[in-house]
Amino acid sequence: MWRWISGLLLLWCGYGVAVCPVWSQAKAEKEISALSAQIKRWDDVYWKQGVSEVNDEVYDQLNARLKQWQHCFGSELSGETLPALAGSVKHPVAHTGVHKVASKDELRQWMHTRRNLWMQPKVDGVAVTLVYRNGKLIQAISRGDGLKGEDWTAQVHLIPSIPQTLAGTLANSVLQGELFWLRDNHIQRQMGGMNARAKVAGAMMRQTDNSLLSQIGVFIWAWPDGPEEMQNALAELAKAGFTLTARYTQPVVSVDAVEMQRLAWQTTALPFATDGIVVRSTDEPPGEGWLPGEGGWVVAWKYSPVAQVAEVKGIQFTVGRTGKVSVVATLEPVQLDDKHVQRVSLGSVGRWQQLDIAPGDQVLVSLAGQGIPRFDKVVWRGSDRQKPQPPASDYHSLTCFYASPDCMAQFFARLTWLSSKQGLDIEGLGESGWRTLHQVHHFEHIFSWLLLTQAQLQATPGFSAARGLALWHRFNLVREQPFIRWITAMGVPLTKATLNAAGGLSWQAMSQRNAADWRALPGTGEEKARQIVNWIHAPQVDVLAKWLAEQHINGF
Image (tube, rainbow, N blue to C red; front, top):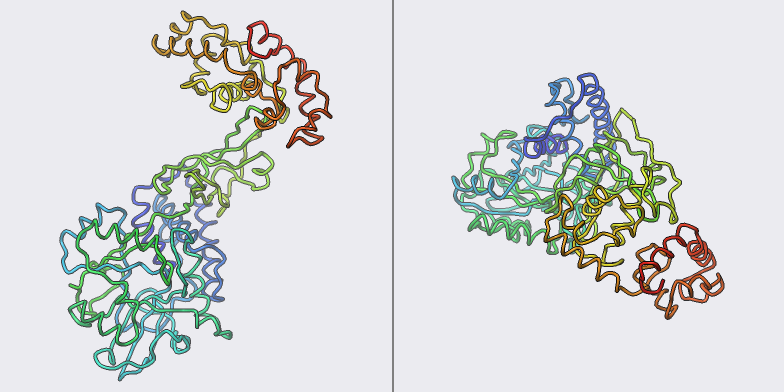
């Protein structure tokens, strides 16, 4: 039942302001039915076989997405399904579940009206009730629906980390806690959840092989009707063998302290996976009054997910300066760390076709190095598989030096590269600036801007007079750039390192080199040498080189 409950809680805190899809009722029913059937299949396999066919985080987010759709189109009752095995053993004290706050401000408001607050890591595992009578562990119950669960007594008796006998005030007690996958020096931010919940659930539901039970630990987070003072409760738990609770339970001084500790537990080594921080008040009602969904004395503030499920809104194609066509998926906006992500690259047309991604699909995205959005995988395909047609594949490294209606994407990609730091380094001039200049002055080719006068630049709509003047000065300075920068800006298929190794070059010297000459340079094989010769002697390149010579550009 943890999956069902976690889905509802995610819906509660994560989709309260979500935008409903713009679908007809017929399409909505079709999409809801398909995703609901898939989640039911996952649940059946999970609860009957102890096998998770999908990552925990993905399951949670897709389940919440289903609840959102059901809410949007009024089908909550017809679409609601419970896991295949809800359990039949009654809990002595109900599991309340934990409300998730969405932000520091919401946590501050919750804390404002409460006292005697403590914080614990939100251990990522499977909830359990442990019942001790006359000093012996007589029953262990999975959370189930919070009122009833599965009988896990036999399995828990085989878990070495759980005390089988207790004395003192704990001899007759009911404890609630988290069964978790034991880890050595687990750093959550670096390693993620590693499907910890599914591993624990799978081990608990195996009918034969019990070897995995030795890899399970327990974190007690509630002692209903236990000592009123938290320090006393922690001391008793530690003395009984539940040492992690005392070690990782701390008094709350302020919401800022909670935020700092949340970050600390996310970035330091722990013996378990975590997915947030829990703040609880010791001012809790007697256990007989606990009910699912009504634990108002405890909340959780989860970490921002390292990966998010996002809906693909559209597929776009871009043509780069070398003619390579790339595919970009536009997304329903999602928040990843501090970034608002609305686009993600899917690579080449061939890779996109292999991935089989269409608008309406649900994809998992995360942040790669330097915070760049990264496509991870498709987690759910929509029922409507209408994909756009990619552009013709006849663009290459010798096309679109000249402006034409069919060439604008590659033409502007060439100009953007030309003005970048790798090219001629024309500061403050990117794609939007080039588009403005071309719209007014109608460039014939990628170097036509060299002919623009000071008056023309200062009079360009969209440019201030000051910007036009500054740009005119930069264009004049660019004329003094060395030859190697000019041919790099033209798009010669050579790296700067190879060009530097070639020594003092001019256009005439380059034209006289044959393939064998180029092969003698480092990093240049037979195929690359052939490409270089073909590029240099291409008619359109030759015309541009002669034009640059007329403009007295260095080396031409």
